[in-house]
Amino acid sequence: MMKNKFKETGKAILYFFAAKIRFKFILFSVKGLFYLKPSSNITRLLINLFDPNSIRRKVRSKIKNTQVTLQTSEGARFNLELNDHVDWVTFINNTFDNLYKNLLDYLISKSGKNWNFIDVGANFGSVAIPIAKTSSVIAFEPQLKLFNRLITHAEINGCRSIKIENFALSSEKVVQNCGGMLTLYKPGGNSGATSFKSDWNPSLSAAEHLKVKVTTLDRYSQAFKHLSHATLFLVKIDVEGGELDVIQGATKFMAEYRPIIILEFRKDLLKEKSVELLNYLSKIPNYYISEIIYQKCSKEIILKKFSQHFSSFELALIPKDKMLYFTSS
Image 1 (cartoon, helix red, strand yellow):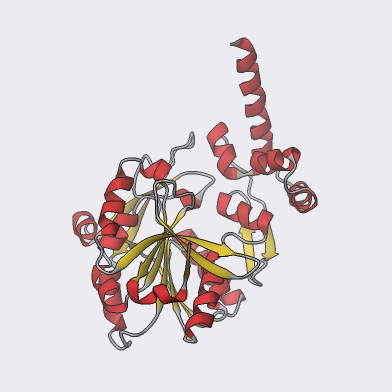
Image 2 (cartoon, rainbow, N blue to C red):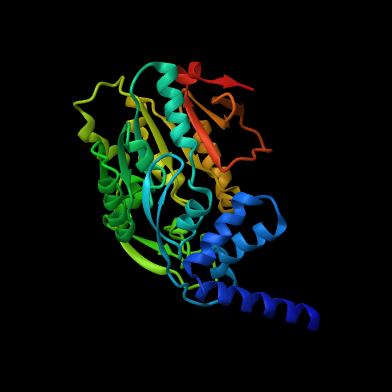
């Protein structure tokens, strides 16, 4: 027992120093090691040690912010703040999540038509900005600091076809109950874990309470009346436990435009709520629930039938009429 106590104390000291000693040359050295030896144990240890998401779980300490400018593998330029997990992952990997960019390129090539991208939970734009360089984007980000960073990133990347909205999206019931102003809980070190659920992805750091404007996608999409119902949409939903509410607030939009929707699915955090979510999704008319797999070599998108062994963080909702774009396994 004493040995384990000393071990945990030693770990806490290491994470404390990782929170404070965040000089650029140290962080760039960790990044360089990742490219030289990405799978080595020491590399994984150091990446985890300096990851703000790991630090916040180990010690109650403010994480020193280190700012760097980075051009990602998709060609987007970002001003990163390395006291946050989303920025740290983007910094280390030169991207955060290129699934959506690859998927949109794939859909454009398969259909021969333009697609619009809706990013629900856009953060600082790690996903939306690379897409907005070539496609039309609507990005929703309720956190004011991230909203302002998103605007800056759109400007420095010359994105003229992006509309940025400072709203959370949810259901009509939630909007009515909170009077249009929703409370979000933001843990230190990971803006991407901000949720309307106070116990979502808990950490040792006390969550900051944020009051944000909230609406529904059905309400917002009333402004789309000038668009043809044949307009094509790809929608990303990353809202940390609020996925069901967003879908419930988008039923009219889905019925009219039949968008392809990709939503984050955290069964480990949703727990019993995951059953409620899946039951609701399975009853949406003419939509299929699938796992989506991107083959980097062939650049092919494969849909895998959803099962209890679902291994990805993303669930794909595919309208029946758009299944023809995909290969199934």
